[in-house]
Length: 217
Image: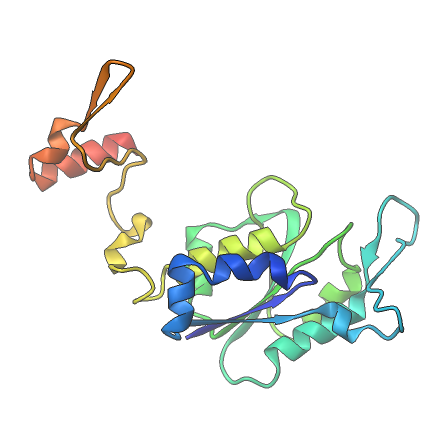
């Protein structure tokens, strides 16, 4: 079982996705687990304030280092097994299927989900002493927080665990798959025009079907 840990201010933004459909069933079957640590629980001021103005000026606010560090330390705790910390950064190495394969071998994966203008860089320096840190970008866009990239990564990693998908062959990158897919009925009509499923997909000739799919990739 892979244990996913989200260090986030917004558990409520993550939990609906992680309890639905395939990932929800994977949690029920104890193929994966998900827990949360909120940096706000580790601040040392009475207001629960986790952000401050950036040194050197600039817009917005920056998350303080120590609440993030303490939350991540708590998430990983003293658990036995291999651990890794995921840090998000625009322009960093792109997360892809090969990286998902590598991460699926870890026992504990902690995702540090920043907000506002980011996290005090000293948190990254400290966390490198807690566990190995991998820095990723998920797509080329910039998001308002790390929760969306974390959810995407959890999804991609989880599908590689035997038993999470109905059939392990459903992992598209492990089989010949086309972007174009079809299902019943064989013919649909829209505004008088008939749209049919390609004949090759109805033949049962696997070599020809795989050749067709390869062209469609």
